[in-house]
Image 1 (cartoon, one colour):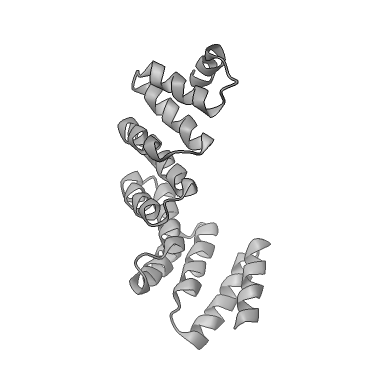
Image 2 (cartoon, rainbow, N blue to C red):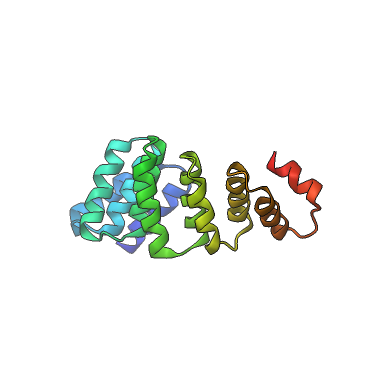
Amino acid sequence: MKTSMIDAFELKRNGHYKQAIEIYYKLLSTLGDNVEILSELADLYYLLNNDERAIHYVTKALEINSEHVSSLCVMRNVYSRKKDYTEAEKIAKQVYDLTKSEKELLELINILEKQNKNEEIVSYAKNIIDGECMYESSRALYRLNRYNEALSTLNSINSENDIGESEKVLN
């Protein structure tokens, strides 16, 4: 089993998604429903732009473990691709609550930005250390006409910028 999983990961990494799927199907037939295998299948189908199959496998994975982060991320990505930002936002918040990672915070902020939820972006800014997240927060502040806060946030990212440079970034 371990060798098959490694082979499937390697095929996926090299863009051979269909061959990786075949290996995972064989593993499923041997092992039965396994959350990791189901999640990998969901991700592979997502990468193949087959959202229907991705949802099928991610749903099965989440029935086994409703807090499986990799599966939730696939579901969030499917909803984002479909431009169903309301559902993507719910899942992104759940993933961020589970992980508290800056990467997942940035994913959430990007989804909030697509919905022009600037106040929420700013409220999440309290959790920000990452420069990219702070940049998104400063843009939200700017859109809310809170220019001084936006400039202050930008300047805290890189204190070497002068205010003139920060203003160029916001525009």
